[in-house]
Image (cartoon, rainbow over all chains, first blue to last red; front, side, top):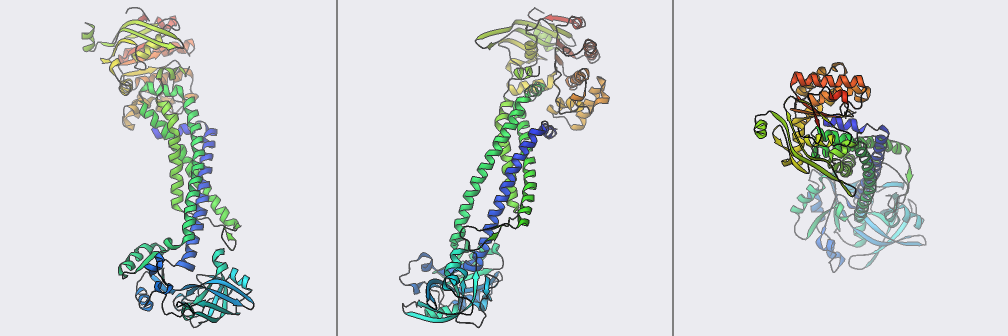
Length: 402
Length: 229
């Protein structure tokens, strides 16, 4: 009965209710579109970071992680092959691959640029086509040794293209200058400008030859499922001898962490603005309703309603209004997301090297959060006018009927 | 003696030296001054008096809507001045049926739902309260109007629904504040006849205020507000 009364009262003034529902729906749909976009960007960035840089897990020596080594060579992991063999036995691990990263000078003709080399193992990771987007040429085959793939920005600055021969100069871990000649197999684009402008890929064995070591800096582990990251991390850490630590990708991906934090702040500000609008809208609607129904409040109080049930009745009306607004907002948000995805709008994101097509995801959690916030804020906003209604002097309120 | 009568359940209302004053701006107004009234069970009592004489205020005090500044009111043995706000609400829900000058039906509810409403407050089962509400509406001749909402009904029909609402829980006392003031003469007589019939048949005590001489004639007793009963 109370719910029936609440629903009927909500639709008493259809225009005002429609306006309130539209206001809540606008807020909810804006939150869904905004959060859907931000989360999609974050998930894409995370996937790309895992594929191209961090893997799901990274094993390195403690002195590597805390940067306390006196000499760079002390940070290296020895006996990596044995460790790799053991890791490959784990059913949730797709592959484990040794990494070395270093700075070197790349020379193409009369151009020389400093760049960061990152090693990969084509024997376990394949030709990298699944992880990197090659805009020219390709990745590595299993048998290729002295080859590199260049980031698109780096290739542009070097005026290099696939098939070109370059000279790569660096220092070994003992501080001796060493150089090798390499052939460009392809030019890749990760989409992150900072990476594409300054990085090149090189097979691990070539990097080990250049740096004169059999060891690796890190063991990168890729899992079949990202959701297994924490579980596998715990298992590996338990098996590692002291001196090495395994870290999840979320801990080492600095850009991902920064964007996640930025998104959180942005989402809160957005939610605050939208909730404020909802609060004001509902406050006005329920406030007007209480004002117009003063006589009726007096009547139901005279019939025996107590102040608590009057308060609940108006809060219920606020909740119903919030729920209707939330449902409408979810429908509107869904339509907006479908339309925006269909339009394939391209934008250049900060720090990106290429345009991306805006893709907004449907996230159950975002729908749940937006719905809950809308209903909760509607109930909170109803509280002040509802309290006023519940505290009315009955005789005074009854006089308003005349 | 009066106390004893009330204990035996003969007195429905016992008001002793009831005074009500309130502040209006900078002035203190006392619409009721030391009013005494006793109402026997089954009476059909009219409160008379000119506008502003305090009839509505007195009804509000008897109905537990307002509290007296001084004096004592007992209704069906319950001393109202000792009740807290929630207890007063419970008292109104259980013991009093109200009929208002402006009908005061809830416009979003049908006639049947309006009559059911007081039973919701008594936490009665839906099937039970529906049956009682139907019976009450039939008693006032509106069994064919159960689904009508107040705006779709005439003034007389609305007041009949209000009477059914007041009677549905079979309260010991029905208070009616100028129940015919917003009705034409013929409808007013019909409404008063209906109230008198219910009073006779069900033995419900009615106390109503009016300043209409034709209506006063039908009362079993007239109490001029401010005079000793």
